[in-house]
Length: 468
Image (tube, one colour):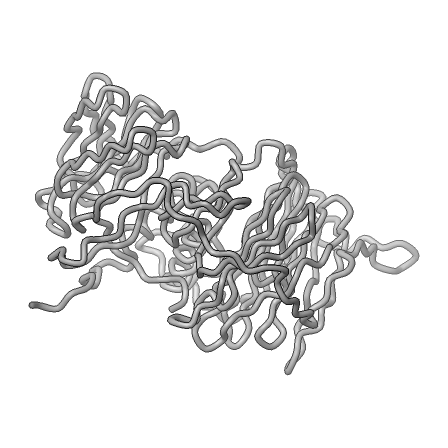
């Protein structure tokens, strides 16, 4: 048998990275890109990091302005922390989470700025601290250890190359022939995919299926890109050549560039703040990511900070994994309005095998996986129940996050299983690839409809992982 694995992509970026780059140009945040592409937030972080590294850029804003004719901005790589010299109307600068050699010392403070200069009271900077942050680990034993329950719904093994549509309400499996995994429109009425054999782009065709009637329709030769809205889709049929196709009439219109995809609503309906990752510093042995928090309504940047990882934790709250000390990162819930940080637990990570640290939270739970990159010795997933204060260790290692309807979604590039966080029952399990499948390569990407009734498996162009 010939060499297996994804062939090296001839362009500077992979097709998936070009998709992420296109959404960066639309100004979408990581959660919005994750929703659009039906992948996890950590998957988006990985792709953005790969884009910045390959293009020699230091921020997603620079990536959005990049063109193939523009050379890499190598100067940015020499000074990644210069990003924090930001200026904006009523902008707020920050010096946060300073690190010390041999161990990390937290220096968390926010300095109000006016026109790029420090505002001062009696000659002193105006300081508003994020309180109660610290890096010294406080290891805690779990209150109990529980196994995942049996799967409520399972399917036959996937053949490794076909586009398959799965209906979790009826258990139906619909094989659509060779092709990519499906993408779903924001209104949940359509699924689109690229049909054809893997890597033979000359035979690719864009197709859609009406989820209510199961009617299938060929859109155009080429690769499906995204839904422009509920009625039209964008297709790339040749290098830098695009069409917009009306889903109702089938009418095809040639355009100079693909129009932007439909932008999903904010992930947290009642969230008054927007969290954005604005800097990556992966200098060994410590990972430091820069984040900004801004007001959704005005767009004003409220503050910026450095952490191993951060995400929403419910309206007005963030979950923050502090820069690590040794092999441990302390996890906090931070109330944005007051800056009050509440310690949850210390999570463990593995320097030599990568420092990606899957962490997620909402009003009821905080979820993370110890040693998330230490394959094959990845640690177990931990879930903290915020109301009771109990810490449970799940007897499984999951790359997981919490969905907006409160389920645990596990799987690095799209949910491979949905789990009830209280009972740990596995509600849906995506089928694994058939061990006898004879395929060159296929990524583990899964597409899901917005209401999570449908999901799709299919060939993916391939990509790296989070930990290499």
